[in-house]
Amino acid sequence: MNRQVTKDNGAALLIRQVAEKEIKLEELSREDLEKIARLAMVDEAKAKFAKARDLARIDYAARREQFLLEAGHSKSRATRYLYDRALTRLEEWCTDQGITPLELDSFQADRYVMALRAAGSASATVNVYVAAASSFFGRLERWGEKQGLRNPFRGTKARPRKQSVKKTEIPSEEEIRVLLDAADPLMRAAITVMAYLGLRVGGLPDFSITGNRWLTFTKGKEQSGEISEEIRAVITRGGLSLKGPFVPLTAQNLKDRFGYLVGKLVMARKITQQYSCHDLRHAFAVRLYEANGHDIYRLSKALGHANIGVTETYLKSLSLT
Image (cartoon, rainbow, N blue to C red; front, side, top):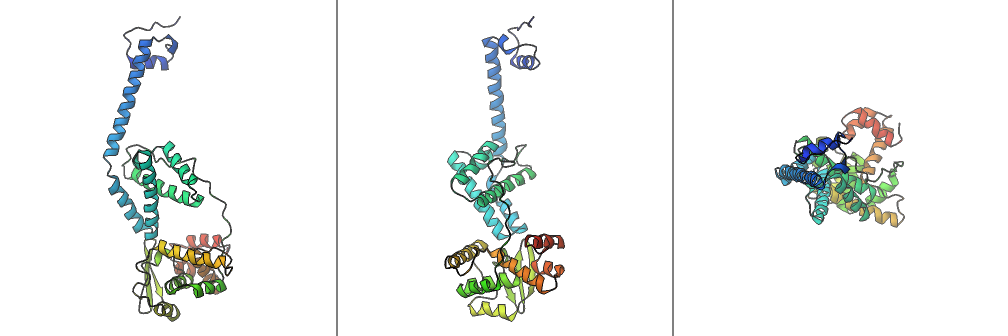
């Protein structure tokens, strides 16, 4: 026999009785169902208010700037630029949706990723933008700012799958010479420094020469070494300052200019691949490693790696081990 439902049962008690199967939903009167509905609406409103209150306490602009500042210190100015661009793209999409980035949930995060893909962004670009946004929200969590709210990009299903890694193509000495001959003075100096000192493009904006030494900051660390007369001459012949030959360009500026130059040479069939700036660093690594009897310690120091393990992984990616 079904338990009698009394009229004075409160909504919370009714919910407990249904959950514990003391009564069935179909046994409830219209009045009891309305009680439960009102309680659910109140609870939902309370949850929304609590979330809005927590979000209102976060100074988004300040946390955003702190995040970018830390990225610039621990990584590079190029990384900061990329993170800034990724967050700006996310903010623009959120504005179109009538929400703030802090209001994103996992469903909306998936919609944002799908919007990036629908706009024609390459899978690699989408993954970089998602990684940057996820890193920001993860940082908010570690700062204790998310008040229990999860990173909406964690585990997103819309993120493109990583493509299988193909063998790294490295420019030959002949192709580097073609690049140098076709470049303007500034890019000729940049290509020379990357190909014959092995510097990352992110280290070029801070690159300077004093006497017979060069100095820069890359990945948040100081890197320095001796400068040859040949490399020094390329810079001075181009009318560039030894104190800052690539100022005021950013790493992204240099990447874009290099990509444009390479694209023209590929179209003219003067080189075979759409090489990146980092491929010049690869070429340096291969040349130094093979010219010095596979001395991994010397290579690690020249590349500015934190330890030998990083260099070993690097050599595997170049199929040298």
